[in-house]
Image (tube, rainbow, N blue to C red; front, side):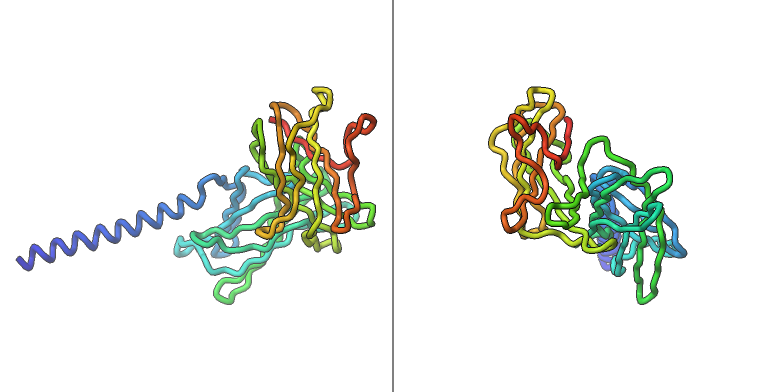
Length: 280
């Protein structure tokens, strides 16, 4: 009887460990759902794996996730302290761009944040990413070359406002537009200096979507984008009545009610100087 009980206990323990192992593997698999690896870097004893929904970086807003693996133990590190700094190396200067802090995901192994590349690379000018991180008090720093190609449509603009402030405005959502009402998400930052781009608060993004190929018609029930307290992005409603190419004409209004960039669409003004483009 005792031997039988021991065998049953051994089976239960084995199943429990197998279940835990499967759960761990499932967690590691699930955290990558919807993500594609676009870069992997080996630095000493660590491998850094970079992921994004698009499986690449591009001009405009980029949601970026990464994880750090200890190559000796083959385990992912979940308690690193991480900072990053993207830099564009131009012919005559170096500058950064809007970016978030790096935060650890609530569960799993991923670290995450966003970077808004306001310009694309070219043959002589390029981006890199400085990644500084600390693991158990040991400091690491590496400079990672990254590819930032141009987008086919305009999804980001860097401009000087009528108030002599340089702004960056970026299209974030919808990533997959549909006929009907879409949730619109936009980000706005200002250039404080060449390396610092804080978010802008309490502005309004006025929108007027038009189809140039269809008599420049608009759409009903659009809602201008206002800032939310959740993530400080600007949320509105974008009405799209049919598939095709749309120009989302914009006016950026500051917290005093002054338009600092963009024009209202009229019979004589067919497009704003500030706009996004989508096609679906």
